[in-house]
Length: 417
Image 1 (cartoon, rainbow, N blue to C red):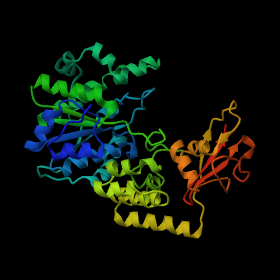
Image 2 (image 1 turned 30 degrees about the vertical axis):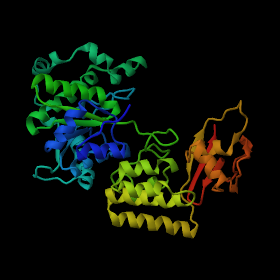
Image 3 (image 1 turned 180 degrees about the vertical axis):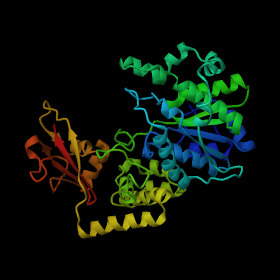
Image 4 (image 1 turned 45 degrees about the horizontal axis):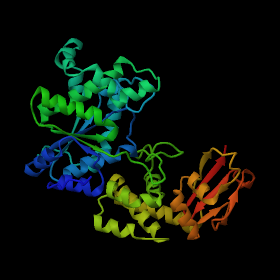
């Protein structure tokens, strides 16, 4: 299907950089963004002192909104965190105290201040806690005001509910109310701050559509929804998921150096995509980096790491991280090795070099074979040509696992299980 030709700078930018998955009313939203200032929001629950890199695409969406001359609103879920979003979850979240939630919100705000300009101007960002209105509703009032606008039939059809029930995992009535609360957020924000756009990940589509419908049905006002695509790595993994755990955005949870290293170790096939989504680098410059081959890809990865780390931690922190990384490389210092457990297919008996590279999470099969052909891959310290096969007994005795290296920078351990 041919993509629409947008007129507004906002949607043209989102389209060119790969942010758009679905839009509820694309023509109307494009017209509104062309005619004046659109105020849009994204909600974030305060379940931890820091967001992780999985939330970064949403933060960047708010940044793109402000860069295009519109107003971003950050909704911190002080109220909804008390319930917990059931989307993609198999179990209820633990209940947090008000003190913990408020502390988390204060910590998370420091990250948004790196990406957005806050203030009182017409396009300055706002950070609002939805507990400001959700905690004021009495139970009977909430049901009378909003319960008639939602049918159980439709709620059961939402993925966040349906998938939980299909897996035979219990969903509490508390969690079942989450989508009502999120929809009411949109209505309250429209009334209080003229918010007309809600954005989020593709898994939030059902909740977002419900909010759009509520605003249009109750107040007969314009309301729009927009979601980003599911983001995975070139090898099919979940973005930001590592053996060490979450890639946190707050420096207290993850150092700027480790954050720089995360981007530096991106898969070859992800560099251009990540540059478009997570940096402000111009598109023509990104195209130049995507055209690099062989050792030049490492220069592109460093540029990605520099740009992404600069946005979050500042140019000085990015420069220091790069200098530290290059100094360690020059001194030949070993980086901490990531251990990855790989289920060994006993029927296959042996794995190819490319399969081990993929198992290590370094590259896809396609990129692994390309790297092998370029002489970039070593297994157990020996350069491979592509014809080698490895059995369980071939593991590196010093590590008790296969030592898989790409170039001189990326090293992983693969342990057969």
